[in-house]
Structures are given as structure tokens and as C-alpha cells.
Image 1: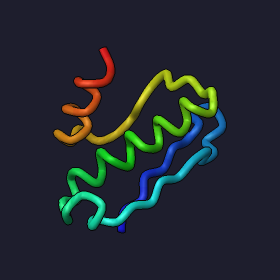
Image 2: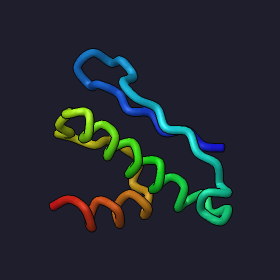
Image 3: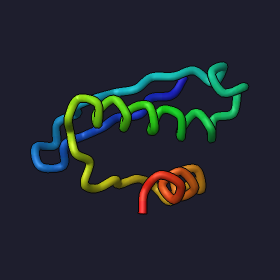
Length: 71
């Protein structure tokens, strides 16, 4: 199991949370991290929220994902 939290930087409140299981990505935890982030960001955008900034560690999963989806 893994969890990905989305927080409003201004208020410090958690606005969304994604929970997933490694079985969703053939037991590859690195891919699960990316899947949960993409799923959560898509959900927030579908709710009409604009994402201005993403803060995370410098994992290759995120660098690769954001390079594909964002300029």
C-alpha cells in the first residue's frame, strides 16, 4: 500500500489523498508512486483546481513524469 497526499500550500490543509496497492502496477513501487500522483492530479484538475506548483523529492519517477506532462 502507498499513499499520496495533496496539500494546499497556503492553508497547509490536505485537500486530497490517493491510496494504491502495488498490485496495480505489477508490484513496482516506483511506478505506483507515479500512478498515484497522476491519478490525484487528474482528479484535482477535473474538480476545477489549477495546480501551480508541485513539491516532492527528486525521485526519477517524478522527473520523468513531469517532463512528459508539463513544460
